[in-house]
Image (tube, rainbow, N blue to C red; front, side, top):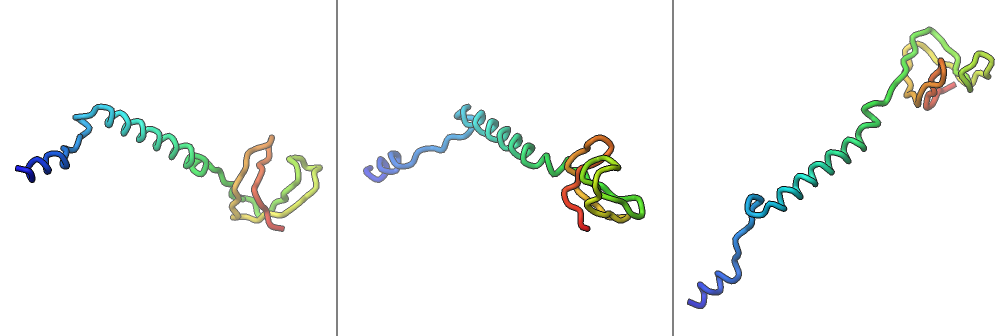
Length: 97
């Protein structure tokens, strides 16, 4: 008899989500939180834009103006990451000379 009583006191049945409605809510909230965090962290690379040079050779200027000094050259087929548009020009992250 003692062994049977001992087993009853040490072994408790596991609760499932259906037995405890708060567990299902917490799991749903956690899933939504993970989805929101993932979308915030992954969104910038998904919307990154690139610039592919289509002319044989081009000038890179300090400002989007023809009177601005030339700071680099670009060649046909090269691809650059853009950091945004400024008027008729694009801001690129890095250009080799």
